Length: 251
Image (cartoon, rainbow, N blue to C red; front, side, top):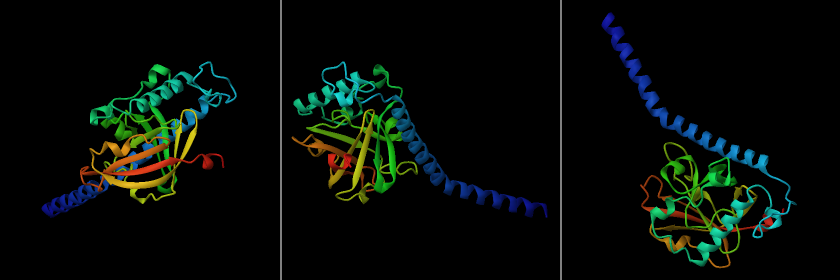
């Protein structure tokens, strides 16, 4: 009788272990998705807590009056950065290493968060923080801004390129980005305002096709980038091109 109980206990233990192994990716993915969503909400809550009167006049000549809120020096520096890379035609956007280097140290400007904004895609029910620099650490936490592309503050002759995993460790990230269609809405909330974009096109490109993500003259763009096909190891890139839609911002 004893050996039967031992065998039965062993079978039950193996069954439970198998269930745990099978459920772990789902449970871990749900945990990561929840953490990313909570981090996005935390950024939005902190942003509301640091805003000041929009009518306040800025002490910096390059900052428009309607942007005269918290961190005016950072906003001015980001404007300068966007203008410079456009004038240089993004000449330093030459490979993966250029993507990984953060464009700014937010800490130097007294920003109390390591995120620069939040991307929201209503159709996908997705909210993710945006981090500067496409490092492995940042990509595990949300969407990342590719350095040497425009920072997420809008403006003519800009193209902010954001990358995200096509699913990672059970979490979604940009996994369902192929569901986006022309006309769908994507918003970027930075430290100062919410920018609204509309999807205008999608395309599958090679990882080295940098020309596709460059700034387009007289356009105000947002470009989303992820690996393609899903679970392929990154053979190609799926790209979603978006154009600023100021009419929707005024609604």
